[in-house]
Image (tube, rainbow, N blue to C red; front, side):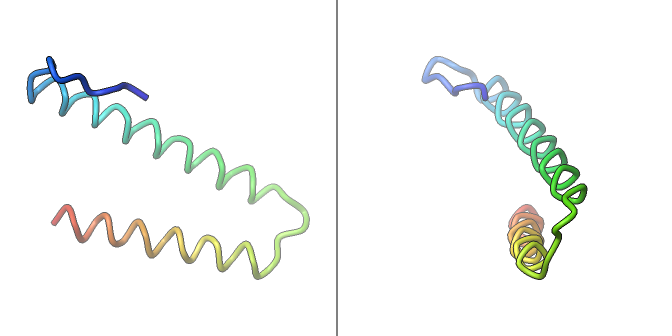
Length: 64
């Protein structure tokens, strides 16, 4: 993750935030793929993904 510095311009800080979000989305996808390969998928996994889905919908709503 890239850190935002006080000396960064708004454009630079924006680009760093975008890169951090891209990295986070890739990590989410990797974790979902790894969990899907687990033989012992149960309803707790389903509930966890439901919570992730709700949080992502909140992000989408926030961004307009």
